[in-house]
Structures are given as C-alpha cells and as structure tokens.
Length: 427
Image (cartoon, rainbow, N blue to C red):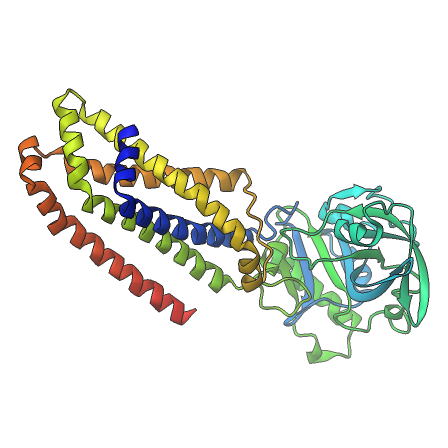
C-alpha cells in the first residue's frame, strides 16, 4: 500500500485527474441515487400500505363529507375508513400570524396511518374538537418547541376560533401527504361545518376518503360494490358518476388522478437512475483508462514482486486493496461535495433530499465500492498477470496495453457520452 501511495505522489497530474473525475462523478451518483431511492419508496414504509386505498370517481380522488359513512359500512370487505379535508388557515399565536397548511381529519387519523406522535395521546387527542395537533416544525416556529396545552387561534370568517394544542407530531416524511402545519377535527362545529351545511353529500371532491380493506380482498369486487352505493346515493346524477377510482396508497404518488397529494414523475426518476448508472460506469472506466496508461510503471513493480516470491493471489489482493482505498477516499470526499450541493439539487428536483443513509442505502454504498474495487483491481491484475519480466524491461507490454485496452476504453467512454447527450435531449 505504501508503494501505491508513493506512486500517486510521484504522478501528481495522474492522481489529480483520477481523484477529480471520480469525486465529481460519485457526488452526482450519490445525489441521483438518493433522489431515486426516495421517490421509488414513497410511501413504502407506511404500515398496511398494500391494504389502504383512496376512493374517488372518474379521474378525481376525493368525494363528499358524508360519502364514507353511507358507503363504507355497507361493504364487508372494507375494514375501516378515515376522512381528510385539506385547507389553508391563518393562525394567530400571541402577536404572531402564520399562514398554515391545515387538515381536518377524523379522530382516528393518526392510528389509521400509524403516524408518529412526539407529544400527546394519539388515541384521544382529537376526541375533543377544541384540540389541535401541530407539526414539529410549526411547534418550533410558533412556540419555540414547548407547545402542549398552549392556545392558538384560527382565523375563520373574520373571527378568531380559540383552540388548544393537544399534540405534536413528527413532520410528514417519505409520504404522499403535503407538509402540514396543523390538524384539527373534521367534526369541529365551526371550522369544517360548511361541508355539512345543507346537503353533506354535496361539495364533490372536498373530502378524501381512505379505506383499509380486509386482507386478500379483490379490488374489482369492492369497486363494483362502491359503484352500486354511489348510484344509490345519487340516482339522478347519471353519467356524472364516471365509475369508481380506487387507488392503492403506494400507487398514489405516481398516479395521474387529480388529487391534493404529492406527485412524482416516474419517467424522470428512471431516466435519472439510468444516468446515475451510466455516470458510475463512466467514472470506473475513466479510472481504468488512466490506470492502463500508467500500467507500464506499475508493471515493473509487480514483476519485481513476482521475482521476489509474491504469488499471483497476493498481487491480485494488492490491486484490490489499492482500488478499494482509492475508491473509499474518493467516495468520502464525494459525499462531502454531495452535501454541499444538496440544497441546489433539492431546489431543482423539487424534493427535500436526505443524505443521511439508512441501513439499506449504506449497504448499497458499501457493495458499490467493493464492486468497483473488484472490477478495477481485477482488470489491472489481468494486465500484468501473464507478462514476463523481460517484456516489462523492453517496454513491449506498455505498447500493447496502449494499443488495445486504451482504444477499448475510449470507444466505450465515447459511447457513454453519446448515451448521456441523447438522454439529456429527451428528458
């Protein structure tokens, strides 16, 4: 390993080009992989995600205030349901005004989706319509973090409606829900009463309904039953009821239905993921290309080691460890570069990127480094494994490597450039 470090020190231009190319490529690969992983796992971590569906009609998600209580109890395959209505509210805390994103929900909302409560009792906090739940971010902004039991006022119809903070929940992460500041009861006599005034089966699309179906139930069977209930509730609407939309929770993010939830672009995600893999391959090839160009100098060293008794396996292990060390250093610096670019990347992609790796992502990084090291070290070993010391002395090996391997790598890298340019124009 010391000889490898001395080699890098003596060949400063080679070392700079290798490190700069690898670091820059890996930084963008990290950002792309984190973005793709986040997008493709929304909301995979949600409890019972394969049993929760959003009801709607036609191309829209959402129904009316009272749809759920008329429809869901009539269908045995529906185990449970909850309602959500999204709205914007001005909130007053002391002398400060806040424009907030709010949600009116049933009192079982938190248990239904198994969201994490930081403070307060999730099972009872909304049993009183005077209680509200606020997000951790809003608690810090409005109350300096200590919010439980403190009053706030919601502006409604020009008047202040007094409420009490009964709970603080973690901010929505890796979910379909938009960032939400306050959550209050959908049964509140003032704040959400307009949806129940007159005909509670009116105001189409005002209230989203999520149902949890019995394990193993057939979606198509449930859709047919829901449609019959729709037709019974609105017998005179005729063609206005354009079928039933029943969208599983993990399908909502990339769904084309009209809704108030976060939406992703699946095509862009897969295209960027492909770009990430191409960039990774390009970085490895650049490393190999320059390594081949310098292989004559390293071949002399390895030939001498063979003459002094080193086995082929020992040479292979040495190349692997050298490549792993080089890649690990490059990756560490690349991660710092990615951190510095996180804000700009998040702004461009419209997603808050989290570079703190979980176990799965950390394992993926480790596997990626080991694979790169195996490939890079293996190819370098193949270049010198069959040569004779006399060939190295004459310089014949260096000539052959430049005439064969360098041309191969240049052709592959040129092809990669064409692929990247083509994808850039078509995305």
